[in-house]
Amino acid sequence: SRRYHGDALAIQEELGNRWTTGALLNNLGHLAIDSGHYVAARQQLNRALAIWREIGERWATTNTLHNLANVAREEGDAKEARRLYTESLAGWQELDDRWGLAHWLEDTGLFQLRLGAPERTIQLESAAQTLRDQIGAPRPPAYQARLDEAMAPAHIALGDEGAAAARAAGRSLDLREAIALALSVDGTG
Image 1 (cartoon, rainbow, N blue to C red):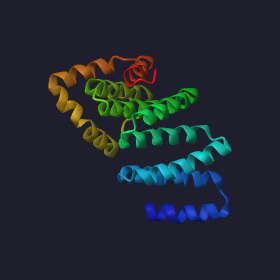
Image 2: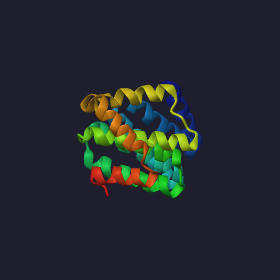
Image 3: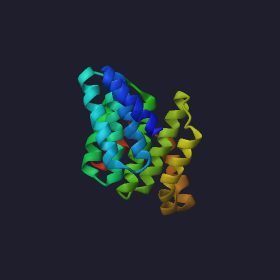
Image 4: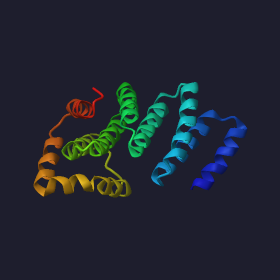
């Protein structure tokens, strides 16, 4: 996939197609995140972000900021992750994109795990599930499997009862409350 994206990128850059070039750079960045190549991911995503801002593409800008926040999270740069998650939140809210907000809750939940807050991790993941149920956007099986694997340390830390209580608390949150929880615990609010 990376090779085909690279080939397509070269063609689109030669043609001067800025939108498709940005999309391919974002996709290459996402592939690099998935394979743990964070320096390459950041480089590709920053190139995509420059294009999105240049052409005024708000949804893609927000998505790329969100992806960059995930890179910062994985690299352990809490300050940069907070900044980028906050900036991407503003975009998702401005766009009223509940699918993007569900992903934001899931990813800020994983950020909470990095910060040592496993209960909040499960609460935010559960709030995201509630939002997904409301908008009819279930998690694809492969995505669910990756999320379950990433969240396993939170479940281990809390045990079955603690995890169940956190899940119930998260499912009871409305979107506004879930966002406030994410912002209040990670220091961005």
